[in-house]
Structure formats: C-alpha cells, structure tokens
Image (cartoon, rainbow, N blue to C red):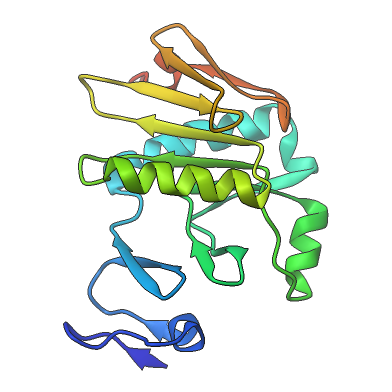
Length: 186
C-alpha cells in the first residue's frame, strides 16, 4: 500500500487505487490529476439518513441500494466518489465480479469549499458516463436548495416546498426541500 505524506502522491492510476492517504481527506482521480476533497461531513449525515429512509420507505431497497462515497469509474482515466449513488441489484452483482458500473442517480452534497468549475466538471463527466439524474444539494441553512439535473441543460431549482424527484430512475423517489432539511422531532 502506498502511504500518504504531505509530498508523496501516487504517480499512476494503479498506485492511486492502492493508496491509503492518512491526512483525513478523500481523493478522486481525473486523467492523472489527484483531486482532494473532504467527503461528507458529520453535519451532513442527516441528509443521507433522510434520503435512505425515503429509499427504504418507497421499497427501492428491493431493486438496488444507496451507497455513500463509492468509487465510480466513469472512464478508464476518471474515478469519482459521489457523496451518494444508487446502484441496481444487477450492477451490484456486476461489481461483485469486478466490472465497473455507472450509477444512474447520484447525489452531491456541496459545501463552501466546492468550486463552481469543479461542480460543472463533475456534471459533465456524470452525464457523459451515463448518469441520468444528479442532485446537487446545498445544505447551508441560509440557502437550502437542491439542483435536480436530468441533463446538463435541464435543471430544476428546488426551494422550500418544491419537490425534488429522481425520476425517471426512481419514479416515486421524491421529497420537498423543506422535508429534506426538517429538524427531527424528538
């Protein structure tokens, strides 16, 4: 295993796949560029919890699964880690045999450190690879917005009581922004 230090980074994709950074960050690979990010933050776990509960409530756990921060090979030179991704049971089985699979629905929970051009870069890559729905969630208490993309050109900006939908991938997977960010009761 390649160990991380402040100045030692993998030089090849094979080294990257075996690399275990010890600096508390997560990394993505994009054609030789190593992209550092902090991953889902503790204060954002509730979003995963709310969405996972909805996923189970709607019965989608029978046809697939939600995975947090999976390694997704978009191409032979691009490995990304969406915050949440939906994989069908067939895709899970393909992965079990070592095949790379592309989720049709991914969710990114954005933070103040995410750069606009990096967000757009990922959107482009996701749709080129075959992703059909992307949610970009901004959990900032002052903004609380969800951008629902069904292509790079088609986006629905959801606020307050607007419904965020994962159709056509998961037709009944829908939630309002207010429900997504609601404070738990007892």
